[in-house]
Length: 280
Image (cartoon, rainbow, N blue to C red):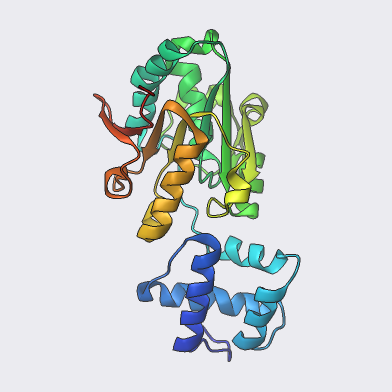
């Protein structure tokens, strides 16, 4: 960092605590260089001059625009199509059959993917349902996907991907669901229309109240950035957002059992997932 602006240890602690309260994301000292670099970028972009002036502006800005800019800068979005594919196999081979067998009406199956990142996960879910689930012809499915980062949501809606993002997709799927362009692959309009993207901070209860009656929630590799208190808050929020019998799929290094006793552990041939228990 060649800038003359410096972030002191006291500045780092102030920012770290503030960002945690706003997002649930906690930065330990190993992320210090990453945080300092991006803070300095925003201080320079806003012409604040120093951390103190920038931090005061950040806290008291009524519109919240700069906080959103900072969140967009601080969040990491790295994913690709068919990441941790075993959970998609579990979805079509086990989870959906149990959910549809228990349904007493023909209401849509609701799937929520959070965080959306640049859209690879929710679009992967849509492709997997179309290719591998026979019930897709009988059931309506609503796929929603959310993220705290407004820039990454815009990218997801656009649906343009690099060769690296699609490297694990069969070539037949690339031909069927994408249009090749000189600088990458554009997902087809039908799939873009199949996913509803929205900006949501899952640490803000007022923003997640609209998400109810979910049958399945994918929340993979997000909770690793939270501390125990924030993880419990997310678990309770998911519990409230789900129908009884619904499932939560976490990342391979995450476990709901260590976070909350609200969910029942279910071991399927393809994956371990977490279920909101059926009412007695």
